[in-house]
Image 1: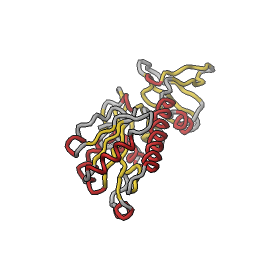
Image 2 (image 1 turned 120 degrees about the vertical axis):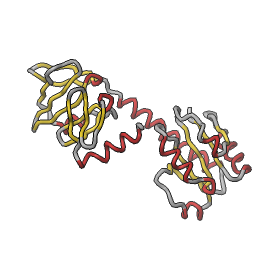
Image 3 (image 1 turned 135 degrees about the vertical axis):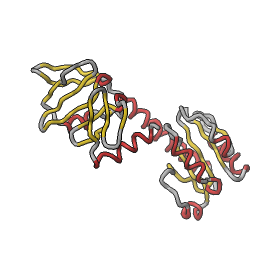
Image 4 (image 1 turned 30 degrees about the vertical axis):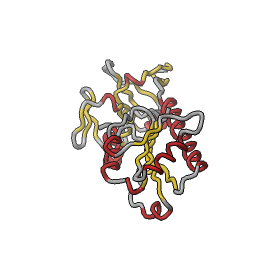
Length: 232
């Protein structure tokens, strides 16, 4: 289910939009809300906010930026209003007025396609284990047990919870980076991929996991900060 929230400076337009969004047989929760109520909506399920451009302000943009499961933002307005909008980074799509059923249903389909493709990708990302060759054996590694990967030229050491010595495999770190599509793992240095759930704390230039200290590479700092921001 996708929840739709309409924030509009004109009630009559909001009612029309609500009616158009509710016409199909897969209609969902479609509510007209004001700014104050918008900040109280649940964001634990897929949702989209359709906001008229005159109603869009910095408070809404700041609130959206703080959400872990960020609702999709659609801006509705005339062609001139759309051309003049300043902040476009958080906008998923634009809905040009005057409203038509065809435009609204096309937008709704695009939202559905995007949301459910993301859900499918997240499900595919939930890889729970991998197999590696180590000591002439094919070994199964549960990803929940991995602390971090340490790259050493053409091979990689895998440090695991409850294991004193790492496993070593003839696979370089880049290969693991491509293999580990799950968002739990992040490369933080040219020689290290860490398990984000295993991090104990982060200082200015280092990450602590268990008893291990892992450096943060300058070129990887931005992606680490972005990941931290999405989970703060």
